[in-house]
Image (cartoon, rainbow, N blue to C red; front, side):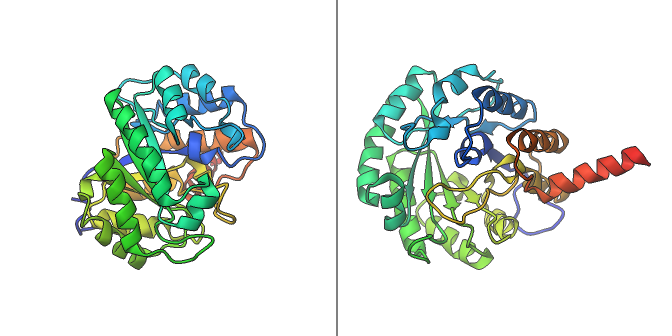
Length: 311
């Protein structure tokens, strides 16, 4: 129990999505060696799940065109999972060939978003994923499922919680061990988060749910707090708040890993992660790719360090 009270978990698992979801929207190609170094640095922090890359058509996401080189180039730490995104059977075959132990599939709760993202309806995409999940499980891989646009769509606006629950249930029933609920454009708030999770947990155990918030409107931490109070204990985040969505105009970065850790550690919720190391990595990667560090905690802690050094 945290010192804040409520029904907060004692431990929260962080899924670091920076190397994949954080970098995929960068217009300038990030060198392969930089991606490898980013993952290797993150592997020293205590993070137990690091989303490494995506085995996707390079024409669709050019930033992920070096997926094989990245996945084979990283130093895989003990007790760390390095899941990869596999949107189809071809991607799964590449993942298996390169030694992946965990893969992820994704759909959306919005028909329009799904059509613009992968050019398939929700039902069409789920039919493909049935085969992907079946073959992945047959190969003894773990499979994670993502549902995008759970609290809003950039094209159609509000999303019914019942639709989110329907898509999530279908992915869970296929064999996905964990379902990550993604607020792709960051329009959610604590009330809509609560309503959505209440709808989903009618069909899926709360222990099998994760949350994935973008911080477009500054609501990510409050939404995470709401989810934690409902029993969710898995949070996706991205070092330095990197990321966006190539198919969701105006969607800014994922919630920063540093900000999530600062909040959780302040609540006496265990993560097993070294916040100072993550802050250093956030400063390093944003300098390397020439982008602003979006982590408020990371920036504040860095300034505090600098001030104490000068005094």
